[in-house]
Image (cartoon, rainbow, N blue to C red; front, side):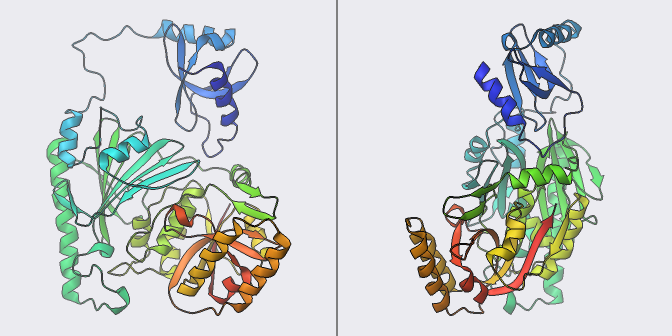
Length: 485
């Protein structure tokens, strides 16, 4: 039960929750100080009411803290409630078997009771033995790349990922046979692979075998699935998908021809999120920009992930950007949509078309922007609006050594005039390079010191890195992408 102070904090925090529309049956609740919040009535007892905010979070509010009209409304709701069912009556939507049996079916210790969605993300991650990938104020993710595939539903799973937003689990994704992990080519340089027709036939057979095995296992316990030509959260409208329900959980099995087989577990009642207006998104993104006393202009709140052992820097970078603007995404699905090579290699151009189609269905656009020269002035057009810039570069050893050193040293700087000279010298002395094609997000700049900030998808230690813009220009591929608001 929350205190009056907590309720007022809830009111204040609601004002910043711009990514979700008001609930369908929401009403205005008022406390005794006149503060208001828009939320949906869920349930009540003699002393408290449970309300649901538009982001899906439930809060129990003491009736004593509410205005008279609200308490009268709650009393009316209580009076209208039907009598509780007898002990012999089964609740609607009861799962066909226990959660322990469901866990055994999956081969994972996923559930601790009949519902996953009210569990703390970190608690579920511990049950699944998924290490924390990253956590920010708004987002958190947990992901495992097992040394050997683990058995899930009788098939080999290569990656498990748990995503959460605003403290609530949004999806568990399990990746089965896929191009990046196909055993015949695992660990090999995708640029040197020669894939024969026989290889493709064998891979297609592996995809079909996984899909059929998993579908048969789920159907045996959960009944016949619903067929979906464009499954929930799909990046490709041509994807083949099947959907089963287990209580409040939807299990969506996807098969992308010549690409992958995956299983996504999401809330069964989740529907496509209403499109956020451009004005709402503009205010939200601008609120994430911080201006520091030393002149740094930096974007905060970008989800962090780790791209893992394959060359997934491009899909990992786009996953972070999409999730940052409220669009669900998973780097494995993005990689497959982008025509990932056997072994894991991906490129900007091959991925952009597929991602753009998906982004447009969410009411946004992916733009390939022209930045002729990397300068704080050129970057400010996007950074000041809270929009990171996807940047294609050559991640050479020298560039990473320079960035590591400059980031570490600037943390202790007090004389920024002197630092500007030091930074300029470092940028001028840097030799550049054209090896190690890579992608990251530019998230900040400093006009006074002529530096830019970027973030790599390598885990929390690489959340904010700084380099002189002159050095950055020497390794740039001149590939820049942003998501239009």
